[in-house]
Length: 182
Image 1 (tube, rainbow, N blue to C red):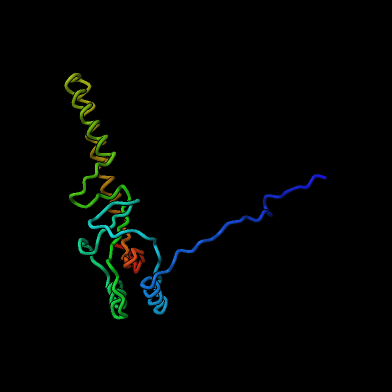
Image 2: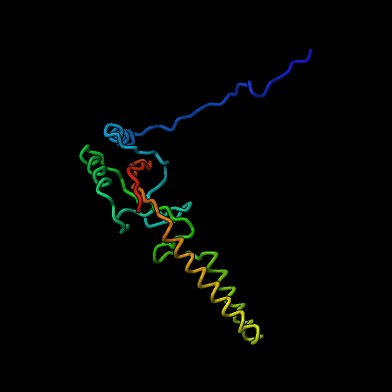
């Protein structure tokens, strides 16, 4: 006889594996829980030695960051130290969509910059070869370029970066201590 099998009632043999919880991680999370602070486990990664851009976030070691940290976040850090917990490092993560300019000294070339440079090179060649057309193209190009720069500056100002303070344990576990609107 034919037996019908249902895909919705099939039991899988999936095994769930939990990541081991380290002592320092447990202590930090219990301090947050006791004070009803929403600490979040973010994952495991080494501490960056300098600011890096990853997945639309600027990860900046605390000693390099120049942004203002709210008193609420500093209170949470003091609570950790008061309980005897000494994280390996603190990192400030700044939300950085591609529209926001990177910090000074970062060797990143945006696609917009690349294509505007290429467009400018072609526009110069066009101006040299066709004077009458260039008289029309250059003002239009400058208008478009100026408008796009104005729009990009306005968009960058309108987008609010959401920095967050992250404690990194001795085992390289990242725990979000606080976040705020900049």
